[in-house]
Structure formats: C-alpha cells, structure tokens
Amino acid sequence: MNQKKPEWLKVKLQGEKEIHEVRTMLERFSLHTVCEEARCPNIIECFGRKTATFMILGNICTRNCTFCNITPGRPLSPDPDEPFHVAQAVRGLELKHAVITSVTRDDLADGGASHFARVIEEIKKLDMQIQIEVLVPDFKGDQEALLQVVLAKPQIINHNVETVPRLYPSVRPEADYPRSLQLLKRVKNRDRDLFTKSGLMLGLGEERDEVLSVFDDLRNVECDFLTVGQYLAPSNQHHPVIGFVHPDIFEEYRIEGLKRGFKHVASAPLVRSSYHAEQAIQRLMF
Image (cartoon, rainbow, N blue to C red; front, side):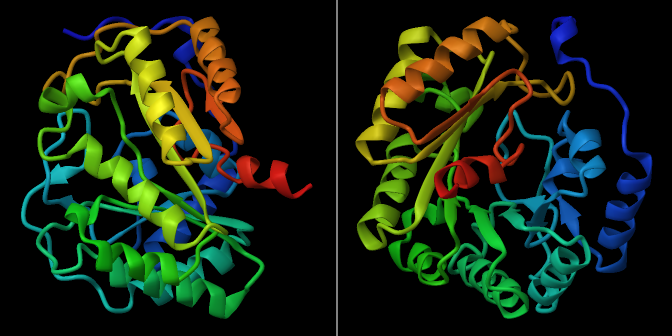
C-alpha cells in the first residue's frame, strides 16, 4: 500500500483559462501529452503557463514499466499528419521551448526515430528560434535510429535512466542501464553542440550511494542536465512508493550534481523531466 503524501507534495489549482486553452488545442489536433497520460502532478501549473509536453506516436506503449501510467499494449500505426499537427499546436500556444516525448515503440523498425525527426523538422519550418527538446526512448540501442534524431538537431536530447541499476528488474524490466548510458554518450560523440539530459526518480527503494553513483555514470558520458524528482505511484497496481524524500535531501542532491559538473540540476519533489525545461538552456544563453 502506498504511503500518505506529505504536505510538500500537495499542489494548488490555478490558471483555469490557460488550462482550457491547452486542452482545446490538443483536442483540435488530436494530440496527446505525457502530462495527462502519466498523471503528472504539475499538470495544473504547466497547463496554467500554457506549456505541455507533447507525446507522439500514440498513447499505447510496447513496454510495461511498473512505475508508468501509460497503457501498455499493441499500438496503432503512427499518424503521418502528427508532426505537422504538433508544429501547429506549438505555434498556436506560442511556445518558445517545445518538449516532445513518445511512448516506446519497439514494434517499429526504427523505434519511431524518423517520426521524431519529422516533428523537429516541422517545428523548425515554422520558427527556427523555437528551442526543441526531445525525450527519447532507447531505440533498443539502434545507432542508426538515434542518428536520425541527432541529425535533425534539436537543442536538447533527453533520455531518462529513471532509477538506479539495482532496481531495473523490478522498475524497468525491459530496459537496460548500460544501453541508456551508451545512448547519451553516442549523442555527444556525434554532435558536441547538442545538450544531453537525463533524470531519475527517488522513493523507489534506492540508497544514497547508488544515486550518487548514477550521477557519476551520467557525468562520465558527459551528460549536461539532470532532473531528480519524487516518484508517485499512479495506482495501487504500480510499483509502490517505498519512501517520500524530504525537500532538504533533494537540495543536497542538487548540490552534489553541480559539484560533479552538471551544467544545470533541477532537484525537488515535484520536478519532472520537462518541468520548467526551458530554464536549463536559458541559464546558459543569458
């Protein structure tokens, strides 16, 4: 049974007008967001700021991670019009920083990499000044698939390791920790102008030394940005919350990350991969 949430994890309702605008735009173009599918605790705040993380390639995942609320199963074929529709929604919401993620599509030959590339290209057609961040799956280690995304040149390529290696069998049974690190390394080896990013969740049963070891592993592959947040179980059928981490501990991890050389570290209970995503790159530019 999951534990009762502490006070610091409670959020306030705000921005009802902006929330309606975002949902209307998504419905107009038949788009999904990871905000809604994953039941993100920041959805009210982010929609209130007219931001959202677009989830492409449908809303059914070919994997079954025990922490995730996205429905597993057999997905439909990719919508060929989706890249254009995402670009139109980005323009309609007047976004300066667009975040694109996807379900994992192991059923596709390239894991959906070409679809990612098309979304990036369509956004750039509208406005080359829009910063584009993609949160990609591991493409099963396919280097050629990853290269399609790299060559499309988003500003940031994010791939989350999610948790410490010891917990992969129970949290991410179909993923592979070394493969995820290798993906981040390959991005840097191919294009050093691209920023790389990764993140992990706390409260799954990890130990402090394991978390810091992940930090070291990410820096060893020259990962630039790091996010650390509290895991919240979507339901009683998902991996249970083993513990709620106090905000002071998150701050300690933020400092440890900066000590190790990350260019930006967002570490707090409600931090998620795309939460205030624009801040990391903006702090480097100004």
